[in-house]
Image 1 (cartoon, one colour):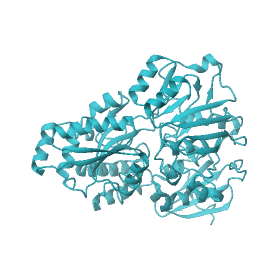
Image 2: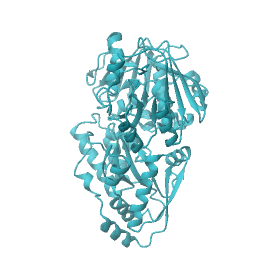
Image 3: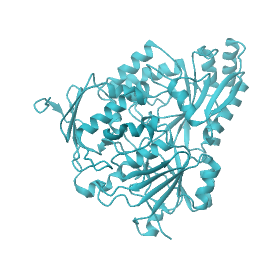
Image 4: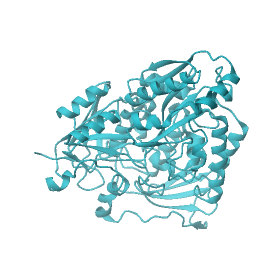
Length: 532
């Protein structure tokens, strides 16, 4: 297949990386340049700039689950992908306009049904094998394989043809226009086809990223070593990263305060706030990588099959209290998933389910006596546990008794993907920070064709698919389509949103240059630990 003579639009055509200088600054542009909130001081000036060598010690609250590699469902997964893998394009934190990564430039066909990408010719896997277009095609196809239960698999599977005849050029042909195609290319990690079976078991984790996985000890640690052949010259700065799995939030806090780790992902917002106030530590707020905290309902389980009860739940929620007490103000209440910068955001619609105890009680009275409903969440997780306690009290106040059902992280993810919740649940969801259509054709809680609530609606499917198939996901046509999707969400309320949340990490002020992707994947390419 050739597209050299086919007319193409130059929409989203970007110039390739112009030498090592631009390549070296790419992480800053895509990550924390304007988005990282530094609550205390700027250590870089005092230390005189980046320092080479040494080991960065990190602590995360969740382990790697290799079988869920493409799901972005645990801190272990996002840490491994962020350090050892790369994608074809990279979204900056504050937009969905792609910038070069392993692809340097691209052209979208006039009809929105094809995309040509030029690929870097100086990239190798950690095994030493050169990266080619065949690897990019393999990674996208693997991502779409139902075996891996990835969330954007519908978009991956809408690609009907891959032209890999040139090792440094990939041409994709689509079944229909895909308004979120760059969401997919930003998300899919480029994996090694020769070790894919070992990836699924965790025996070998081979990517093209700045660090390579040296060792994984389940439930204990993940060790990384510097990729000496990384395509960005003189990166990364650190020789190694030691990531400890510390599931208890108080133990993680103690490890950070005592200097055992320089970085922590999994602290409560209150502990992080107090840590920063005490001095010597900073928080990193992942602006542009927002998640949403919500209450989900299995609509096939009585009495949650009655939309009036689900509406009562939405009216009962004290969103302001959750934002104030649990999130410490690092977020804002919503009724719909969209962050304020999303083209789907509608300020008026976000007041639809303002807290109204009397209206909630009236709806419960219409339904009748409500039996105790199981309410599942992942434990230990200080944010979710605190939220669940507030929600339990809110629902009890309006006559909806719930029984708290804490489960471990792996079991929770299994129930989420498999739509196996017995009643209600609470967790965070992602993807609303991307092109809005991605959420409703991809995310486990929202996918119109199959979701964790087991909610089925012909109208919702039609509206979600229509929004997805608009080539320009930011156009007026797309915005109108998103409004129909939002109306479906509010009317059926199989998910009751609580708040948009800025994920938050904590670090020692000795650790500099930490960044992240829009999926909260840890980036340490430009990071270093200042020596006292």
